[in-house]
Image (cartoon, rainbow, N blue to C red; front, side, top):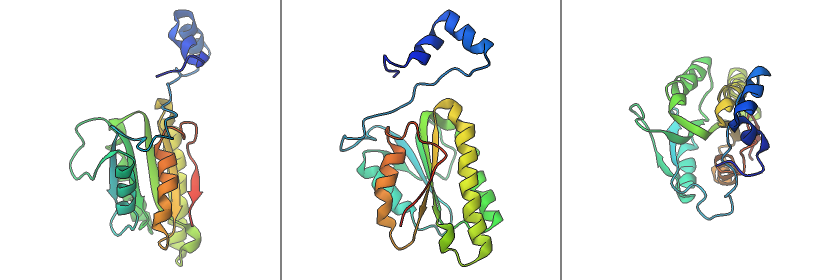
Length: 196
């Protein structure tokens, strides 16, 4: 719901305002889902997909965190039939270009099912922890992928962010996941956060 002080949204809702925005080549603004992070279950009533890529280490922790925040979580093996509010992907095992293609293949069919103001969080391994240069490059490639995803989905008020985690402290994912999936991050997109 737009707030009363969202002047641009009110302007776009008027006939002459919409015409002016169109004449200037500006997109119609999207109301952002924000606030509500202080509640014990800020994600109550939201539907999230937790998608593990093979051999990842963060999906169970992410799923437990989202459930504790009140979200309905599920893993998907078949096409999603209803709108979803968020997608969390465990890409901690992406170490090759083939794995990066697999990351793209996971997102491609789901983006059209993502609701306006939705959240995308990708959890990846930290590039500095990779022993193999190809794996380190793949970790950096995930960062670029998330930034591009943020740009592509931002038109609909969707945010896309990256959490770079270490295998030693998967419990440290809870705070950043709560922030990136909640309303407090409505203006934060395309960012990478290293958690150690």
